[in-house]
Image (tube, rainbow, N blue to C red; front, side, top):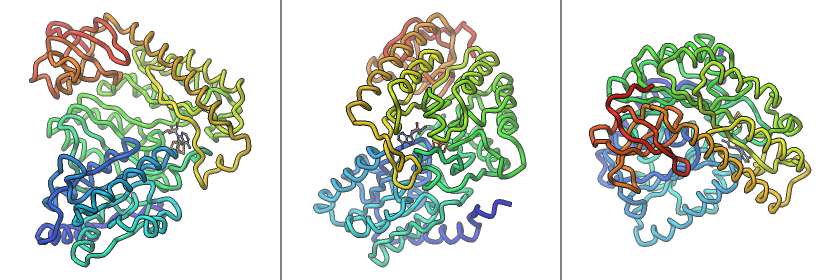
Amino acid sequence: MREHVQQITPEQLTEQAQFSKLVQGHGKRPQSYYIVTYGCQMNAHDSETLAGTLRGMGLEQAPTREQADLVLFNTCCIRDNAERRALGNITWLKEIKRDRPHMLIGVCGCMMQQQGMAEKVLRQYPFVDIAFGTGNLYRLPEYLYLTIEEGRRVIDVSKEESTIAEGLPVHRDSPFKAYVSIMFGCDNYCSYCIVPYVRGRERSRRAADILREAEALVADGVQEITLLGQNVNSYGHDLHEISFAQLLRRLEDTGIRRLRFMTSHPKDLSDELIEEMARNRALAPHLHLPVQAGSDRILTAMNRRYTVREYLEKVRKLRNAVPEIGLTTDLIVAFPGETEEDFAQTMALVEQVRYDSAFTFIYSPRTGTKAASLPGALPAEVATERIERLIALQEKMTAQVLQNLVGRQMGILTEGQSTRRKSQMTGKCGRNISVNYTGGRSDHVGQIVPVYITGTGSNTLRGEYREDISHE
Ligand code: 5AD
Ligand code: SF4
């Protein structure tokens, strides 16, 4: 079973711990680091692991990237603009390095897993000192050691993408919200998507490892855990231990106050999971359910393996089971061959589902994917015009959805002072919508407190803290 998965052994981790000690005691080690992260939550979480690893070697976070001794770019390659932004910023740092020659620059993440990227970095970015892929992130201590001790560049993007490393140090960005990876990789091969090529085959962490991590987080005072995976609904398919719904049940037993997960593929959203969403008290009433398009023809070309009808049926079941659920989605416009009629169907679907919010993207061809060789590319003006119409429609829908929430009582996980109005506190409701509220106190930070919703802003809700009301 799972021949393709390479579990990083305790010996390999011990070896890295030794490198970590060597770096820590090294006279030439960088004193500070700065990590620039692009892309999704999974990358954000990888950056927390990179930060934990660097802190373990005695480095401290620098206030800005220009002041850091080591700058790591944790890259994303899902769309062309993510890639261009990263490359632009890396090149810009070259100028800073001219004045601060001891500065080390590292590049890691999904972009590095692309074919030919290692060679490109070697050739075109001679000022990059360290480059590694997503599967060998656990070897950062070794790379850093080789760079400072031997003064050489380390470029390691060996095809080790299908790894699982347990027990790496994590420096979490928030003391009360935490990410927990439950699976890695993706086997879906949506025709537009580069992820299966750069993040490797689908592989789940063992339930016992996930539960241990969650228990430790709860003991640490964490209020909200977001489970991460490219396709969490197929959690456990490779392990044959427990299903995703069963995992959620066990996680509820840890005593965590709020639980979220992402991303769900609609085709794998099971009735068992919907029932669990209705039953589980820790699960927040929110689901990110990317639909991508509202036309069956386009969904087939995207290899999504569901029809609009099937998708809507799942939405209906979800809302039946969890009436207060908020849905969010991802949408791609201007997929090759998308006609005005196809696009009109996407607009109609958005109007029908009434998402809380949506991430909208213009299709970006990715080398090596199936869609990249499809005919029917659309002119940029058409793509721009369509995405603008879609965004305008979603804004209208968001305003209506928010308006309907006025008068509700909600539990808000408070994050801090509102940046615009210092007298107010800000946080997130179970549906993951930002709520700014009056009457809050600084000791609410990190707590879920009852708030009465009084109005809306653009993309946000307004409310007041009310000690005496009940809330979910
Ligand atoms: N072009 C545009 N958007 C894409 N996404 C993934 N690949 C592409 C691409 N090639 C979007 C999808 C996915 C989200 C994370 O990014 O909507 O759900
Ligand atoms: Fe990409 Fe599709 Fe996998 Fe999501 S499910 S990561 S869009 S291939």
